[in-house]
Image (cartoon, rainbow, N blue to C red; front, side, top):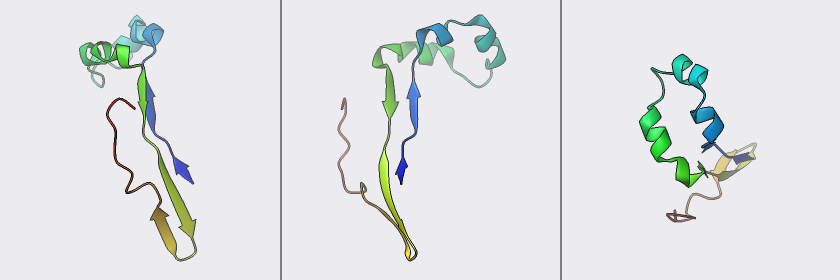
Length: 67
């Protein structure tokens, strides 16, 4: 099983007034705009699931900034 949460910056969505209004209390819009140049981030873990339990296969892989 692969668990891949991700978040992506979509300029058209960040500029949509109706979304800004609807999510005004949940999103720090200035911060979101400041991260626009990153494009997004994806975090992936590979997990082996068996009858005995689970093992995170990517647990010991070092995190590299910028890719």
